[in-house]
Image (cartoon, rainbow, N blue to C red):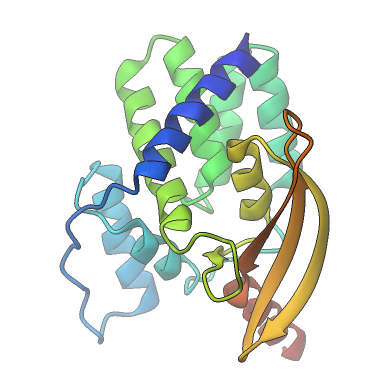
Length: 219
C-alpha cells in the first residue's frame, strides 16, 4: 500500500514538474553574508513554507556549509527509513527522516518519507510542509535544464539525486559514465523505462560534488 501511495505522489509531482510553474524570485542575500548565514536565512524561510523561496538558491547555499558531504551521508539511516516506511512503522520512519534532515535539510528522500509517514498518521499540517519541501527541491533540479544534453544537464548537488530523479520518473538506472566538457563535469546516465523497455540517456552536471571531492583530496 505504501508503494502505491509513493507512486501516486511521484506521479503528481511529475505532472507539476512538467508544467514548470515558476515563482517570484526572492531578494538576494548580501554578498557580504557568510555561507552559513546565507543558508541559515534561507532555511528559516523554508521552514516557514515561504512560497517565494528560491529552492535552487537554498540548495546551492547548503553546498557552501560545513555539513555538505555529497559522497558520505546517512546511507544506513536512509535504508532504515525506507524499511520503516514499507513496514508502516511511521513514527520510526519520521525519526530516521529527521535524523537525516538535521544535517542535510535539502535531502529529497527524507522529505518524501516524512510527507508520507505524517500523512498516513493523520498529521496533515506536517505532511503538507514536507510535501512543500519535496516539490520545491524536485522542481529546483528539473528546472535547471532538461537533461537531454551536457549543455542542458540537470544540476545536482549529490549523485544520489540522480537516482532519486529516476525513481520519480519511473526509470531504472542502467549505466553511468563520467565526462568532462568545457571545464564542467557530467554524469552521462542511461536508464530504461520498465513499461516500454525504452532506453533513455540523461546528463547531470556534477560540478558541485566533483569539486568538493577534489578539494577534500587536497586536504
